[in-house]
Image (cartoon, rainbow, N blue to C red):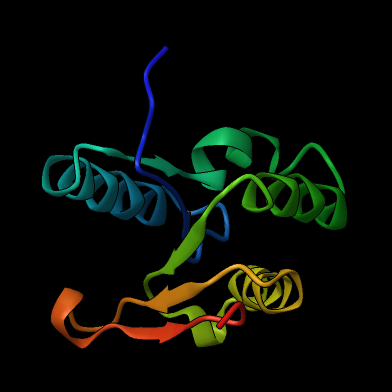
Length: 116
């Protein structure tokens, strides 16, 4: 069995836009090379195909379940204008899951850790 040092949930605006899905793919490809012992989870790639099939809240519930399996969450993109990202941040806060706002790269990350 393959073990990972950390499981990281990737939060990024989606809105059923191909360009957002592509951005997430590029982010995860880069991160996988940079952090080979981390497993990156993308709710967009896990559930995005259901965007127009299930109610929004059901889709969010799927995402939040996946978030609950992660050690921490990394937030990318214009999260302040994304209903889904804001819901994920609130869930992380309420669940004690640390999260990082990835605005300008690793050296300027803002960490929010509700376990310390």
